[in-house]
Amino acid sequence: MGKVFSRALEQAGLTDLHNRVLSGEPLSQAELLRLAAADLLLIAGLADAMRARFRGDEVRFVRASAARELDLIVFKGVASEHGATGADVLRELALLRLATKPSTSIAVSIETIGLELAQTALLFGADTLIGDLSNARTLPLLDGAAARQREVAGLIARSGRRVTFGDAEPVLEQRP
Amino acid sequence: MTEFSRVEEKVRAGERLDYEDGLVLFLEPDVLRLGSLANWVREQRHGDRTYFNVNMRFEATNVCEASCSFCAFAKLEEGAPNAHTTTHEAAWKELAEFPDPRLSELHMVNGLHPTLPFEWYEELLRGWKRVRPSVHLKCFTGVEIHFFAQKFGMTHEQVLSRLKAAGLGSLPGGGAEILHPDVRQRISTDKANGAEYLAAHRAAHRLGIPSNCTMLYGHIETFEHRVDHLLQLRALQDDTRGFQCFIPLAFHNENNSLRKLPEPTAIDSLRTLAASRLLLDNFDHIKAYWVSMGIATAQLGLRFGADDLDGTIVHESIYHSAGSRVPMALAREQLVRLIREAGRIPVERDTTYGVIEELPRAAQPEAALKVRDRFAQKRALSVVSGA
Image (cartoon, rainbow over all chains, first blue to last red; front, side, top):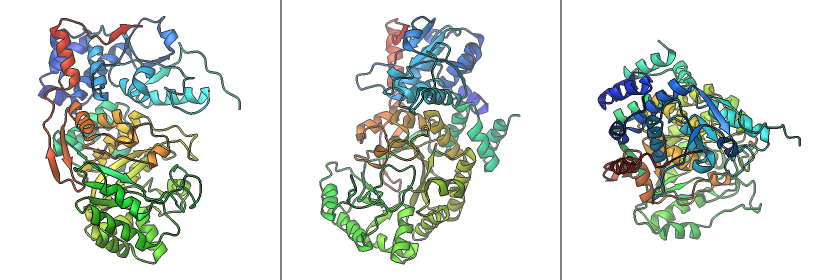
């Protein structure tokens, strides 16, 4: 993450947690409490470090029906009487990553949190996206299944990652 | 040392970034690292203070001679379906009856109307000043100023001087699109070119009229074009110091002739905010405009270099014509909450960044309180379920 991140961790007194994260141990409740109110980018950096080391850069894109067959945890979002803000959702997701055994896959549903936050969630500890390429309501992308698949691949690539569609239905090129 | 580490060292040493450095920013795969660097610069300049205002949008006419390929707002002629030009009386009434006494700014952007006389615009401003003199009028893009100069046979200075005399306070930043001619000639052939846009702003700054500037990103341009654009704005700012704020504008693809292009993603928006903060070292303010990039991304942008969320807006047509899915308005309380939940201090400002009210920060973000409460009850993170 670079010197700026390291220095910010140091100033926040959280360097020990970085070492714990890289050791492959989920953080304890006491450690998560220390982190809960920390700078959002620091929490993200720790969650992303854990994800990168133990889950790699591959992002799976799966349909909801296929996700039920997979060994993963689905992040459901945050309940709030005022409506959770994006920062609330991402903070909670990153804490979830840090609280979970590092080898565990963590998924976010595009239908639940929206495309905008789902892509950003890939920076906050998520490694799997659940979505339906045929659903124009939750995936407001280009027309045509193949174009939509390319666009999903592109948005994942632009988060610095690579995608597999292994558990999604194969997408057939649509003819006009 | 990686290329990004080298750029990071330059930033930390206070050295100016160049064109090649700008490309490194846009190509860096570790977006969080880029964001952390931009956030560091933002906090050096503003700490946690984050600006917003209580404003309203107004579009006097959507009739426009120009035919920009990304635009879903403009109608080519009066009488076309959905073409609209306000009357003075309706425009003045809308401002006079605006219910929020905290309103500090009216932000107007228009089409390039082929027949309205210049005096019509002057009288529009004068009337607004009569009904609500305290409201700052941020009106007419650099493109509109250039259009008036051409159409009415005046210089930029003459146009701006007359509008200033009628009540104009500042210029919004719209119309910059991408300044590089290779792109501009393909998306905006029949309005001010890049040099003319900059010349209009230079003239405004010479007359003591501050302005904002923008960049429409995520369509046919490359990262090279974005860096070139930002450096052109930085060069003008070196000369005049008249820009208040830079606002990256995300391309939207509905109801326009670029509808086959994908829209920029949230991460592209965050990357662009961060790169802008790092390259535009002579700009005080970088805005995460929630109408353009979405509310969640704009809020997160406050950790990626931005220090301003824009305002309440109330009614916006340009982005909503092109498929924006955000609400038409955000209440002041919603803006305050978004800023607090991002861990920042909300500061209500006027158009020229005078402080109207600085509000207290949240003791802790809501999400942090929820975690604490759950742990106090010895429950695990309750938002999780197995698939």
